[in-house]
View 1 (spheres, helix red, strand yellow):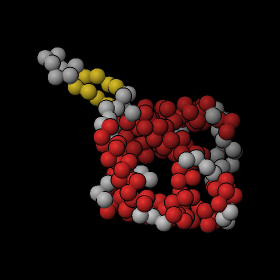
View 2 (cartoon, rainbow, N blue to C red; view 1 turned 90 degrees about the vertical axis):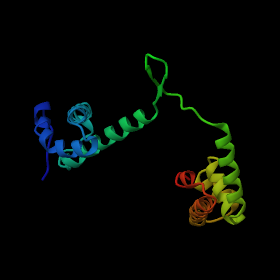
View 3 (cartoon, rainbow, N blue to C red; view 1 turned 135 degrees about the horizontal axis):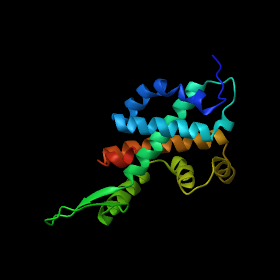
View 4 (cartoon, helix red, strand yellow; view 1 turned 135 degrees about the vertical axis):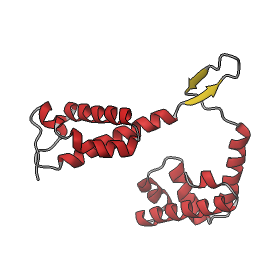
Length: 175
């Protein structure tokens, strides 16, 4: 069924339809209300981007999901630091405390794992990792584009398996 958006009030009728999905994402009534409000606002601001005759529900769900994901990512950037003095001050900080020795351990593990993967696969993988596009890698290595993509995929999978074997589970999932 095709829908059109002609006025802000025509968009408000979708609020009840959005509520269950918003609650599924947020698990909180207040956050659900905020997410619906943000979604309807974003839809109104971008009304010109909606094509009449297309699925408005899908469009609204996509807007809602993207807002939720962006908010989630924004919140993950902040960490809470507790001050142990008598005032119990909580500080939100965008700075994440890192341990350089952990980075070195991870880099060493990745280096060892890469040495165990065939050079045929690691060369295109490393070029891709360094920012080269598939087409550039294809031209520099004189390989068909599909072969380059396949080798990068295989290198990534082998590297993940090797890192899991070395006990570096969390990093293996992010490669």
